[in-house]
Every structure is written in structure tokens, then in C-alpha cells.
Image (cartoon, rainbow, N blue to C red; front, side, top):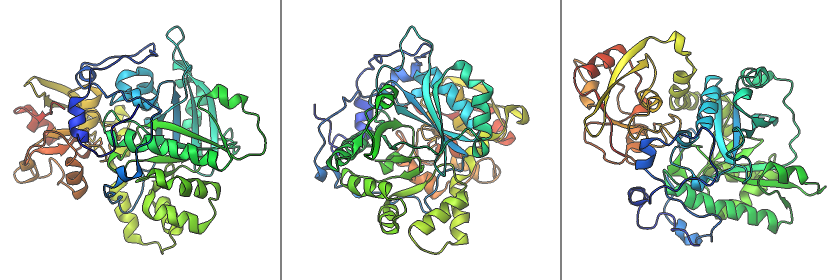
Length: 457
Ligand code: FES
């Protein structure tokens, strides 16, 4: 079956509005919750694998990557392998699968980033409690496999200690029998990811085969049975929730944890060459200069240093300062334990006029509060990285000026750029909820009227 061509008419936004009614996933996690908002915003169900579209489909100019290219500072990455492919996921998989939601919360509190990947079918069924395979990775090639994470694993000391002490944990191993490339093919929120990402997956797999190297199929079972000695082994895995739709296709290489964006199928040979020869400076420079977006698990300064070294230009202090400004706030919000935050009430008004006064905490972003309360269309798909516009809200720009000065931060260029991707933008009101932290004054202002208004989509 042919898919829609990337960037061809109808536009991503139009396809978002025209998408069909939801189909239940063939596999049902035990604790799945169907939210009202998911039913209203049903995802497209593209069929995959698919015929690759023609290279000229990617003629649209690539958008410039953030400068400097860094990821929010976290300690490690946790890859959670689920048995359903990203092309079948709703726009926000946590709303569909409560267990994924719980894992996300536990890892966020430990400053570990979660990426959900597809492990092939057969990883679970309705009769069996939810249990997913996972691995924790830190830069330097250290990996710890968890054959199955269940609700009880989540509270086990082995799991929690691994997350808490991840950089010094002695059970992390350096054995990496294959190189894995996670490619985001999640198109329910932004079709560019599934369109370009899907074709990149096919191109990478074809490139591995063309070289006569071993391509491992999805699924733990297939991995375990893999006995072929000698040949270099690869695994090309579909994933979602990596952030930065407008720079699709996005990929993360494991175990190096390098984040690459703006990839096209034609880049497959260079990606494979670089990952097979990571110490080759020329291959690294060629790939990184247009595609590097940071290294997960490294502090911001270290990412900038890696970037500078990778493209062989001298480090600059200014670059580090700018990088911290880009990568800072979202982690602060999730890292503060609830008990240490001052509780406040904030009013959100839905698109149909229904008002909700909900509890939030000082310093918590409006995106996090609305998402936790399941309000409106707020998804925060990128995790608060200013890369998705799924936390779009209406807050008068007038709150920037006297007598309200300080209630909300000024609109930055990055926020303004991202708002181009929001639906139903209102002049002088549209903001991203992940950029705005709750404070006492904002709480009081919200309770004096409609407060923070939420869009329908
Ligand atoms: S959560 Fe993605 S832009 Fe705000």
C-alpha cells in the first residue's frame, strides 16, 4: 500500500483534521485508558511496511536545526519496547497505555529520559499483566537490560537503584552485540515523522543488507535466537516520542546515544558508515554538521564540547550559555518532588467554556498541570522541549506588561517559531504551556476570570 507522500497536499495540519475514526489496537494492554480527548482526536492508521516514496518527495527545504544542538540534560535513556508499532499509536501513547505513563513518571523523577520503541508483535496479551522489555543506557556504551518491566519491577530496588545511580551502577555492562538505530515513525501528531521516518527505516535496513551485514529482526525472541558469528549486527527499530517533529526524520543511535535529525533516506549510507566507524573524524564531521542534535545522557556543556570536537571548531563560552537557555526549564519542573512545591490553584477554561480549577505547584509548567489533569488537547508530546506545539494555550500577551509584569515570561523566538505549528492560533494570546511556570500571581489572575483558555485541538 502506498502512503501519502511527505509534505504533499493535503498538509499535515489538514490531515490531522481529516484523520479517520480510531481503530482499537490489536493488542490491548490490561490497564489501557481511552480518554475522551483521544476519541475526539483519532490518529491516522498508516500501514507499515510500505513502499518508499520517491526521493524527490523530500524536496522541501530542511528547517535549520537549533543552534547549539543540544538535548535537555538527563542522566540516561530508558528504551521501553512495546508490542505495537508507532504507526498505530495515538498522538499520545501514555493516554492509551497507563503502564507507559507510569514508567514515564518514574523515569522523569530520576532525570532519565524515556523513549518508547516497537519490539515486534507478541510481547504481551490481554491475559498477562503488562510487562515490557527495556534497557537503560548511559553515554560511554554502558547498558543494562531489563528482560521485563512490570508494575512490581517499577518499585523494585534493582530498577530504582539503577535509575538513581545510573552513572556509577556496577551492573551496567559494556557489551553491545549490535548497533541499534531508533527512528521515530510516529505520525499521529505530525505526519512528517511517519512519512520520512518510515522511509528512512526502509533505507537503513536496505543499506545494511546491501553491505552483506546482519540485520536483526524486531523482538527479543529473534535477538535471542541470533547466533550468526562474525558479521556486524544491526537493528533498525521504529520508535516515538523523541521530539522535534519539524526536523523529521529523527533518529537516536544506540549505544552512542547520539541524536540525529533532518535525515532523509539518501543519508542511510552515511549514517551506517559513521556508526560503523565512530572514530573516523571525516565521517563524523560530514554527518554531524547538518544532522547532530545532541547526545542523550550528557550535561549540556559536554554536548557542546562533543559537537565542537565533532565538527572540529573551537569551543565557545557563549555557545554553552545559549545551550543552557535552550535546554534548561523542563527538567527543573519534573525534578522537584511534589512535597517540596507550594500548592496553588489555577483555572483552565475548555474550548466549550467549561472551567476547571485544578491544583498545580509553584514552578510547575502549565503544560504539565493540564496534561496531568487530562484537560483539553494538551499533550506535551516533546516533553516540554519547545518542539511540538501540543501544549498550545491562550494567555493574553498583556500579562507580560505592567501591571502584570513577571506573571509570564516574554515570548522567545523559539516559542514563536513553534507556535507556527499550532492549530487555532490567536493573535496576542497563543502561548506554549511548557514555557510558562505557575506562580502565585498567575494563579490569582486565573481565578479572577476565565484563566488559561485551552484550544479544541
Ligand atoms: S510540550 Fe512540546 S512544545 Fe510544549
